[in-house]
Length: 307
Image 1 (cartoon, helix red, strand yellow):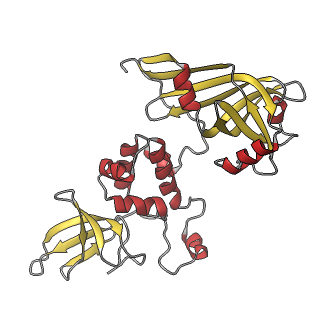
Image 2: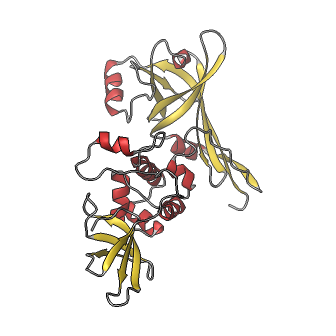
Image 3: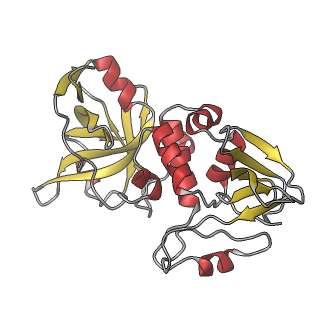
């Protein structure tokens, strides 16, 4: 007996063939799809570990309509990446992308795996499998996960990866409020991607995204001496970060304004390079650290008027 995640385990009466119990397979314990399975029973919605007997069989889940390419593919034990890639329809994404998006959103919401699994009505083991390995979740599973994380299903599938945020409908009664300096520092803190506004070498204004760190209330980013963002050095600049909750049509933004300068002290440069959470996404040789010491820190938040 072999199964995939999302298949149905059906237990029938040996004498009459009548279905006595069925449930969705939400967890595999062997890469080749052999038992045992974590099964969510349709009659109780409980998840239990099942060693199927002779009265059980697998009912494969239907993926899409007839003639439609399979949405996801997963290599079996022993298959290499080449075989897995060859089995994917052209133009689709790596099925592991869903798990990575789930993990990132879960951490952003400060949710543990156990709590996320409880909200999504699945076993923590299946959630761990989904986050760590290419998986094949059903549409129902994606809907439950998206609901648990408070995001659209399309966000888990990467449907809006190439679209700017904020295309949803505006709130019926929005409330725009100013943020205090402490909340601004909290939202800005640690690291991420922000936008810096500078006057380029040709005298024209420019806004570019940069990976940044925050060290002792000072914004740090790494760049190359001949890049657009390097034009910030020796001037007062504006640095902005924001977040948009597409599903709820709300979000926040923080704006920091202050002088930018090059970090020249060797020990400081070495420490920044060692502790940086990530290298610049743009790649290349970007070893010049620039610091921005905010003299002004303001922010705004859009929420429903009743919050």
